[in-house]
Length: 159
Image (cartoon, rainbow, N blue to C red; front, side):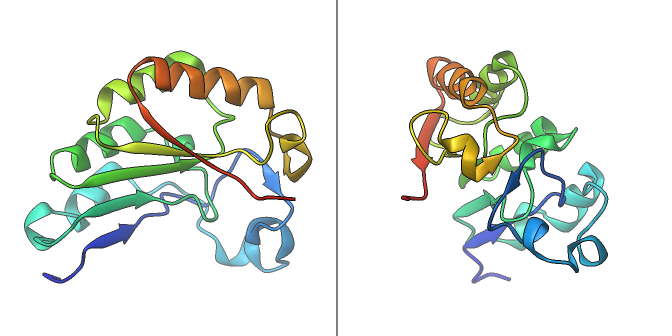
């Protein structure tokens, strides 16, 4: 494992919204295939130890089929990887949690790490693709994260 530089981690398959192109939404097999639990912090600590990955550069909580911030131990997981001297990226739809939670995340993540916000549009149009999302809530959350010193990237699908 001394050549692995990037790890994508799906902490669960839970998500608080439904995006039109998401596997969870379009697949009839999703309920049979996807994990119905959260990966426990102890499992993360056991399976992902720094000495096993000497070349690691990026830990990515990718959100391909999950919303990583739904995980009840998310802060502890971020803290585990924050000690690794690698880049942490969190991909989120941003429509879960309160602004205070995002402020806390900004303070827990080293300043060189970032959150990638999946916001498809600059207004309520985002809610059309990301069903169940609330643009105003997302806006409050990313503003709180940035104001607390968090680094952000805006990822969007151009319609």
